[in-house]
Length: 337
Image (tube, rainbow, N blue to C red; front, side, top):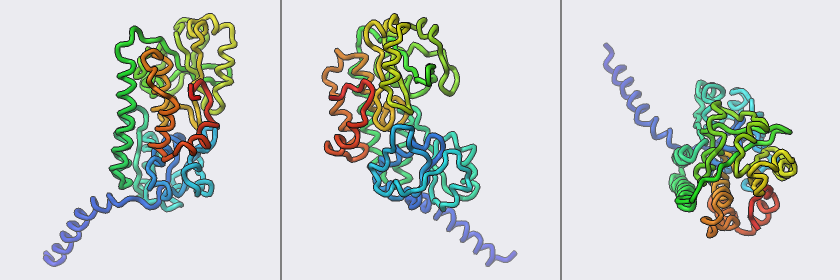
């Protein structure tokens, strides 16, 4: 046995064992994001200011209502925009030291990048609990744990406020959330953020049980009429929601429903993105839903002030920036004056 060679091998192994965890904590310099849900990932990452100049390329971040990230990062328009279905080789060509994806990509492009030796971090971003965990993970990997704690504190405060305002209500309004897809309507799965928002706001989602899948499910007028919801909240991701909401309100078939009779067919608020989805803006969607479902119990909740606070806490906007960037894009029945 060559004792000298054995000692050298053991020493090298020890160095690797000690160094690997340390190296893993070094904040990345070249961040890349992509996939079909890249916008959700990017909006969360850009809530960490130090990460913005380190992003070198991103998948599509415009759902159809405009590109928000260019308002945070002056260099964003010059950064490459990746195809949402780009292969691992495309990402690897940019020589990233960190790729950030939704967890669904772990079996595809994420796993392929890991096989190439590129560090990959996955986010779930589907529920409030996911957000707490994912923000903590981003803070750790980006070297901003204090910022992560600030963001988690903000979201937990929103959830606690919504619970307090809706607690003890005499009844839970029966709510239907539908996405407008042309002349058709779709409902979300029970586990998605849209459902959670209604529940946390003190409403009863009427479509529970109608969509056991993992994506939007089409429903017909007969089913909507059978549910006869007290409130209908309409979503349209790629266009201003006002048109879809006006179309439903003007349809005599919907005017016979409880929501139609009471004037409670409403468009979910939007700015660059609709507030119902598991984007960072779900906090605004939750506050809005509480105000809509329990106006008597939430009179103290000022939606304008909360929207301004969201953009200040998440993205550093002062009132002037909010009025310049966000307010002109507000559509839907947002209640902000």
